[in-house]
Image 1 (cartoon, rainbow, N blue to C red):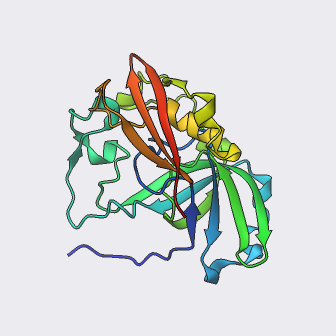
Image 2: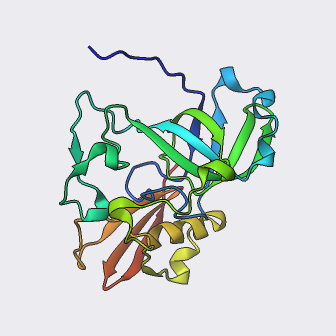
Length: 231
């Protein structure tokens, strides 16, 4: 039997993604996305963050809480390869791993000392589901964490991919102003599963306080509906 080591949840992510659909496939792809990290009561100690403001980016170590499985597979199908080609799980960032642990680099926007929640970390560019358990936070160190000469394996040919987004002003006005740039950035990344390309299909995505409906055809994503969620 494999040895197990207990992990403590130190904080939880608060983001605009109540479900997995639409979450960027990697951190940093949508810099406009704003999120907050709220510590569990036991760890709400401002001293634990002393000096953190001197760093521009952080590493988050967290749990794929909606992808935990009892078993595992040595191969997975990365979306970057169209979802049809299998690669070794340890050569990918798939959530379906022996230990459902994620790693994300995010931009540190600041630390707020909340009267009841204690120190709250504000970040940009996160790719985490709302409520995601966080195991640890570490500073990103440019002198050792950045490797410009690094090889990208099967992702090497990827130079960035964005759809053109047609977001009618009347629909955009239904989105809270602070969420508009983030939502538009998420849509530009093409939230659809890589194996779906039906120009007639209307897709739906929950984001913050709204549900968004859209279609995609010939590289153009068109928003066709925005509904405010009922409280």
